[in-house]
Amino acid sequence: MKLDLLVFAAHPDDAELGCSGTILKYIAAGKKVGIVDLTRGELGTRGTAETRDAESAESTRILGLHVRENLGMRDGFFQNNEEHQLKIIQMIRKYTPEIVLSNALHDRHPDHGKGGDLVNDAFFLAGLPKIKTEIDGKDQKAFRPRLLLQYIQDRYIQPDILIDVTDFWDKKMECIRAFKTQFFDPDSDETETYISSPSFLKVIEARSRELGKAIGAEYAEGFTSRKLLGIDNIFDLR
Image (cartoon, rainbow, N blue to C red; front, side, top):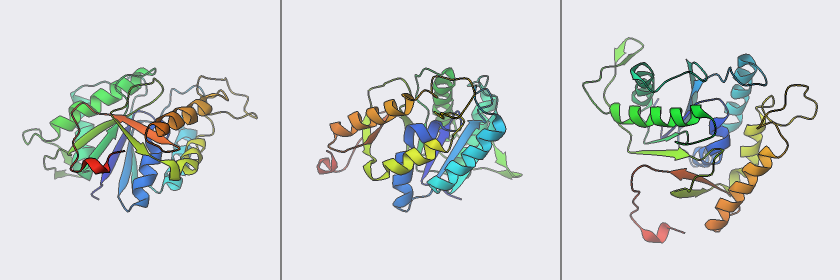
């Protein structure tokens, strides 16, 4: 299946927290969108890999994704090396997306920066014909999408572009809360973590409100780019 937008995430719930409003917006517009999670999030303090699998499936249903895969890399220990780059290249060539979104390049969790760099490097390499990959026993053709952006995560990073997600905010929060072992639950007896505190999701909302204010919207999501961005019509800018 060819996708319009392919999102890579180091952990299940990264895409939901960072860019699910954008995912919902483009699915509603008729675009084909998928997520590839690098790991199962098995090192998370709360829950298990199995509960994360179930939560990811529920979030996938809420989002209405066309596809979601998990590459089964080791949470906390995957590397930006040839082995892992080839896995990302396979996914890019399999789904031939127009646009790729990836983890923030700098963040509190080291997997996020590693994941962002891994996808950045594989994004370029995927377009080189002399790098050979196959999937399901068939050779893949070289392919490089036209744009790579990184979504903003825990650490505040000045965005290069903002997307209005006001109409999809409530559904974004619904898909985040599908990861019920990870976030605030007054009935949970598991160890409290940085992201399970009652204030964490309030911070997510406050940041999106702040970003939205910059473009005259109630809520927005921010993205960074390693290359200069262009537009055909300046009247499309806010």
